[in-house]
Structure formats: C-alpha cells, structure tokens
Image (cartoon, rainbow, N blue to C red):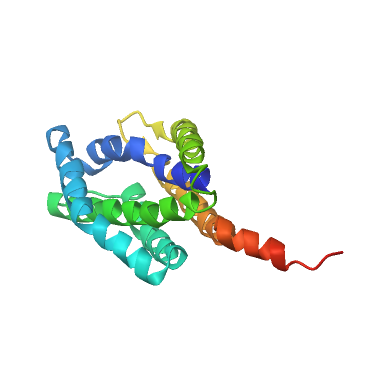
Length: 192
C-alpha cells in the first residue's frame, strides 16, 4: 500500500515546477511560493488531520483525503495559464490533501506489526517508499515529453496514472488489518 501510494504521489511531483514554468507561464523566480504556501498550510492542517483520524478512524479519513486528492492531482496535471493566486490555491489544496492522506496511512501501516518490531518494519517501509518514489519519477519521465516549443506534453497522462494508483491504494488500505485484529481473526477461525 505504501509503495502504490508513494508512486501515485511522486509520479507527478518532479514535473510540477517544469509544467508551471513551461505550460502555465509561471516565473521560475516564484516557484518557491508553491512550496512555501504548501508547507505553511500543512503545518496548520496536519495536527487537525491526525486528531480527525484518531476520532473518526484511520481508514475513513484516509479514503476521504485520497478521494479529495483526485481533484488537485487532475488540476495540477492539466493546468492552463492562470493567475498566480489561482496556482497557489490549487497547489495549497494539493499539499493539504496529499499530506492528509499520508497521516492516517502511517498510522495504519504502523499498526500491522507488534511494538517490538515496529522500528525495523518502519525503516523497511521507508526504504520501500523511497524506492517507489524513484521508480515513479522514472515512469513519469518516460511518459512526459518536451515539445519543440518548450511545452511539457503528456503530463495529464501522468495525472491519470496517479489517479489510478490512488484508487488502488484505497482498495489496498481497506485490506490492511492491525496486528490485534489479524490475531483475533486467526483465533476465531474454526479448526479444519
């Protein structure tokens, strides 16, 4: 689940800045604003998402944010020339919902092993996520092309690939069971 989610995320991330410059006409000097606004927004929204996941459940909150992320993923990979404030608004929402997906996912994933195994498991999980980000960027790079006039082409295809992976991650997350629930299911299984 972690691999699929990270691939969906990082297939589009490396091409956000180039597409904003080449396709939207955004100044390279202002690219930092996207990350500044996005980072500032996640500082304030992340604790709220964590509390929401604790109250409402990790999986339902993940599903809500995963579904919400489909909108800014589509917008970012299909951007057209628009004012700076609109780009900052779209990218800000992107950062909020993408980060909002990751908070309950980390809680879901950390619950699949005992506390004694958690450190080792999470380091392997982190390594696999990093591998997935590199693989996703490679796939995105194979799809995206630069036209003769300097525009980024086929970025929308990368967005559709990302949307497909987000849908797959929702399905996979529903199949992940915490260690306590998995142990109870084994105990309740009738003997054959």
